[in-house]
Image (cartoon, rainbow, N blue to C red; front, side, top):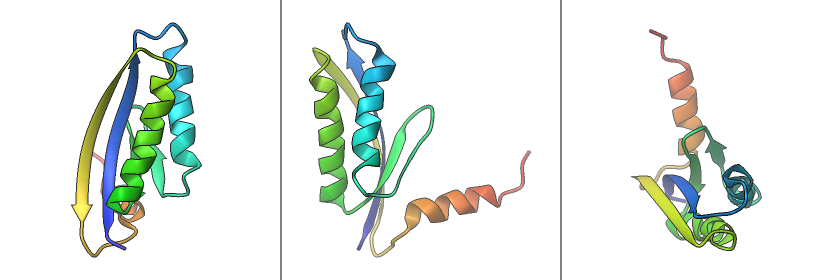
Length: 100
């Protein structure tokens, strides 16, 4: 499997409900996808094949779009042909760097 890492953030615009509750629903879509993922305060990163990752992101956007009249989506991709386990490897690499 060739890995693609996509960091994305989805933001409801003009929603009458709590933005954090709506975004939490999108994060649940990612977490139940079965794909490696990690959420931080700025984005959620998901790893897998291009089509499967984009399908999960689309489902996350659809969940938000069901609750808001407009949706903002930001994506950043790291395409690593021939690599697997990229998300965990990058996390471990960063954890091993000296601080400061």
